[in-house]
Length: 331
Image 1: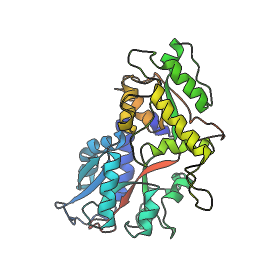
Image 2: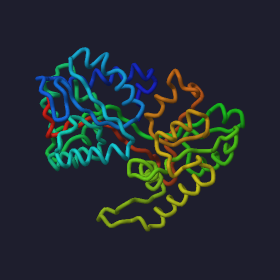
Image 3: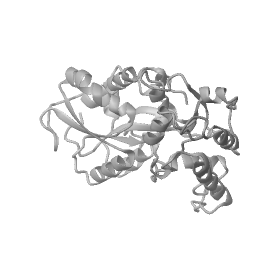
Image 4: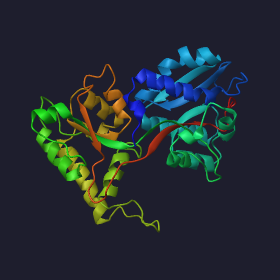
């Protein structure tokens, strides 16, 4: 999936996202303070991805100045934020009004009655068109009742990023549609291409939203699956084992140091600092890699998610905003 805004400067992209978020957070504000909030304020719990950090920096000068609503941010790494969100929303504690949720969690949270319906807010905002959001993403943010419970902050797929200058210097060519076998070969050839550079970065940090995100796409393209159509676990299938072994061996032989502690943020840092020649991960990373202050701006090439037995691979994912049902400040 191509996300055009990835090419924009980060501040502009975040400002545009903040403008889209404002109607969701302030459409019918009545000024009531929530639990843990002081006066005209809302509490936001979110993942520490670069785009969210940009939003945090821009909030006071844009959202708060325009609406008079203060925003108290709690920003945590992915695994930590998921734990904290699930605890607060499951207990309907109301400590946080809004949180970053994925399109995996939102239907589950909606089924459990933990989220506020967003359709009324969409209907009231004449300047917002829900049809602008990709149909599969709209569907993934609805509950079993067909109602809307999440609004995307950004959407992403996954692709392969590589240092095109390093490839050119060593006479290497990235295939137009690479296979994982070709990627492994290129990782071996670029391992050590520059002082301290490894061939590839792949997530190794435990967590379903960390290592399991890219690993599952590798499993799928190798012909494996977590469950068959009858919900029988298939983790011991030859395809699943082959894909997992391939992933682990590739990281051990040509991957980043400290792979067991490396998630999205760590791999982004490795790529930005020139410590790896390739990285397979979320398309949202391009915004940071191409930022004005990025040391590798203009030096990164992009290729589709590598494949093995399937015609394509990758994911369709969003970090979206969900309002807790127990929030005292839903409007």
